Image (cartoon, rainbow, N blue to C red; front, side):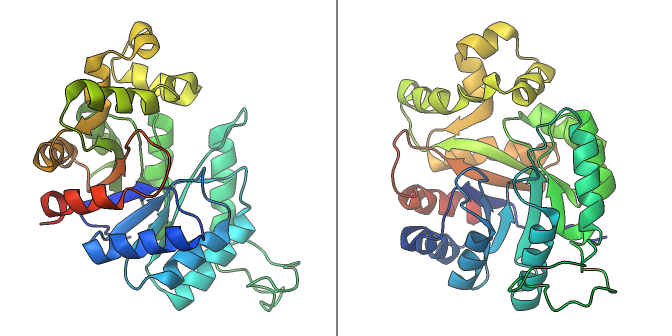
Length: 295
């Protein structure tokens, strides 16, 4: 199996099918970024992935992540099949969000369906409505799917049943642990927060505001504790925690921090630029970072 290649750096952001989002995707492509990871929360539906791919030419898109309790395996398979035909190699299915009592069993079952979902009842207008019932639906190949894995069991599942893992809020030391678990041949793509700000107090305040949400989520809290952060750290978000989980400073300083993940074994770092304001996509920041990340 060949793992997907997204280059050393990409972008992670929330996009929709709005004209502004489509223009932002084209801007990222024009700047030379090879991949965009689509945040699951802002994603209004699978059609947006198709819209973004149709609005661009070469840039790759990865759903980072599709929650398996929101999107059916049949619909994900249909979207993948249609895009594999019209834009081969430009869509990789990133999965996660199994929030029930047995997340591993849920994900295993979902992956079973992606291995080949039977098709007796595709609704009219569905991309697979014309597939004869006696034939299986095309699945999503292992090399074009990955998991948003944090803990060791999720990393095992990513290694065994997908092309690799896409963890978020991890340190380079944890990247090295994830690489050991995945082995040498699987994709390890790390999402990392970035603040293009040289004032330490301002940069940390922006990062802290974003990070503060995640210790309230059990899976992220457990991951942060596995990385050596204490309950007090999770409650107070001290500077050493913020500096470990967010890269800030000049573009050159940020690039040096992100390269630590590469040195620890990551194939790819997805740059999640945060600015402290809600509004348009951070295209100016992507532009400022591009010479340091892409050359």
